[in-house]
Image 1 (spheres, rainbow, N blue to C red):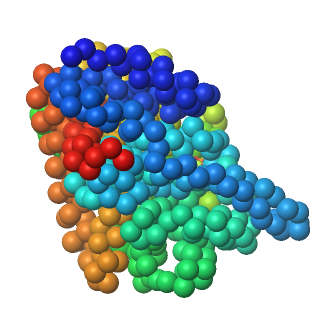
Image 2 (spheres, rainbow, N blue to C red):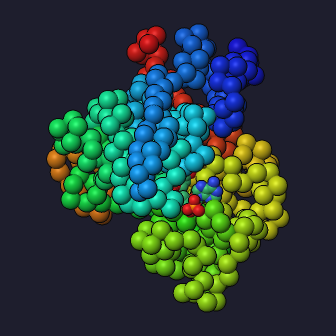
Image 3 (cartoon, rainbow, N blue to C red):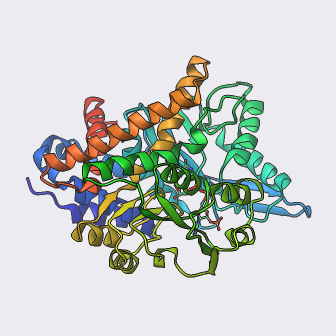
Length: 444
Ligand code: NDP
Ligand code: 2IT
């Protein structure tokens, strides 16, 4: 059977106009799974692909709130419940001015395959708002979160759909949203993950995405006769994922020389001081430019690209399409040989193709950043059991999960004769579990 990938893609573009990021995410997956569809015509005959490409449910709503000046503000809220074939919808909430339906759909689509790879029973979903928490007071953020949850709470539940954090949504926002959910629904259940310690949160969830990324890359390097020891690492972003990726990479003997935010980047040849970044970002909500005030040997570059800094290993941990083909060329020319995607879709499809054509090791987002959502699923397990596991217990499980995700990507890439193409391997392994479940459950 020959698979017409272009036909599927043309249909997606026609049915979802103007959603460039969603089209991009779909194109990458379709290209990878074409050989699987050729080998398994039952998936094509039962419309698995068409059904996967159409979210089960898309919710958009008004979020009105009152700012500190008494002025009414209106934002738009989203929750896309993409696929629940293997478990309740699970995925983060993003608060960023760039959020629109196309961003939430690309993230929700990716989440289906990522969650499948975790080995845990979670379906794919994503949500968020075009609200910008930057520059808002805590009281404004609270009023926004309460208004957002007043509507969202009608559509979620511990066995239905369990949101969590993403860009612009951390412990503070989860706290405000959880409080409002509990108040309206009059129940204390694990409806959100990333909760605080002492009220249902899991130890190691804060660290999980960054640590998990480094565990995955460690396995990828090991399989190719390499390790983090003594390597120069550059990380984009300086938020949740970037901070804990930096900490774990350093613990393996790497030297992280640069991190960034949306205003610029810092280069510290003595190695990034994680405690300073944590204080600036987690406590003071300051700009990364402040870093050089405490570390005078470091250099701040306003604007520009952190990828101009020479490195062996690149860990993009900020946002989508951070690395395009030109950036990829710069990285390769500067000697970079491995990329671990901490962010969702941080490399364009052209950048990925360029890296693979040059034999660069690429740890794809769906696999490499799955440690966050995997640990969220561990938080759900603890909530259901009404038990709390130790940090070490959660971290050990996370390490085992990331190791098994790497193996799944490696095995799938080998099975299809695509050695070392972990991008295709992740898509194939993630797809197969969901496709089998959908086939077994009939046309729904
Ligand atoms: P945070 O909000 O904690 O940090 C985001 C970081 O990325 C900040 O440094 C931010 O800079 C930077 N950034 C965001 N948008 C842009 C932009 N448009 N241009 C340049 N820099 C930008 O988010 P997280 O660390 O949680 O998320 C980072 C990435 O990891 C995202 O792609 C997210 O989807 C992904 N991810 C997160 C998981 C999690 O558990 N948190 C799990 C899996 C993936 P500034 O402050 O200046 O905006
Ligand atoms: O992209 C992601 O996997 C996340 N933002 C984490 C989702 C979650 O449910 O923990």
